[in-house]
Amino acid sequence: MSQPDDYQAALAQGYLPIREVARSTGVNPVTLRAWERRYGLVVPYRTPKGHRLYSQDHVARIQAILTWLARGVAVGQVKELLEQRVPASAAGSNLWDELRQAMLQSIERQAERQLDEHFNRALALYPPHTLCQQLLLPLLEDLDQRWHGAPFGAQLQRVFFHSWLRSKLGARLYHHNRQQHGAPLLLVNLSSLPLEPNLWLCAWLASSAGCPVEVYDWPMPLAELAIAVDNITPRALLLYASQALDAAQIRRELPRLNSACAVPLLLAGPAAQIHADELHNLPGLHLATGPMAADRLLHQQQLL
Image (cartoon, rainbow, N blue to C red; front, side):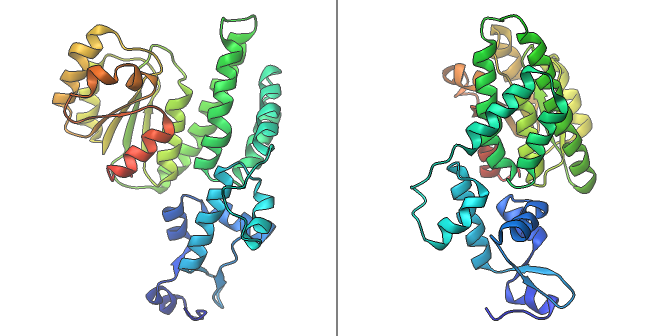
């Protein structure tokens, strides 16, 4: 491709504006601009009027960057690795361990401002998929281990962190929903515990892919969800359960909802793995073990 000098002519030649690159790669425009400005990682062409335009080589470079980030390499180290053509199999960084430990300390002290600052710095440089895989899911695993057995102070930490996470991601979902159109993805907490963090991670990943979302983070009878589906007409219904389901849900309520539901139905979370043998013959029901698997499944089903 020759370097473009006219915006419309460049689009006709196959160049992509930043919004299309963000949609296809999952890296939002703010992060793409930060990579360009702070690290020179991806420097797009600029028209005389300042429009950023990306070639297929730029898109391939972004995918290579994401591969390194997924292996735990700090964004500030990626440019040198790309220029040296180091194989992506050679990686290693304690960036995520350090950030996770800093967030754990903030949670222990209920230091909301510090927790915000740690997360915001990462959010400015890393796409949601990377943050979910490298930071938030391992952080939740660490917290579950710390809280196992309900030691003194565990419930305080749980309520503090889950409330913070819901507020943090909820604000982003609200902002994204105002900019997006089409049928939403309806996500429902199927466990008996409120403030289900992985439900919010599922919603955040879907919203980052350009999908409007509605989140019902409170236990409710499965029979009543048919009403919500009729009223909202979502593109799909995603149920998240971090606990085993009871016999009535498995044998009667979930099959009945599956039969009555006019949209694709997904069950995500540990319950999908616990009850895989019981549910795999239920026609039309899709199972995913966690947020990352649910996101892949939604993309495979062309629901995102």
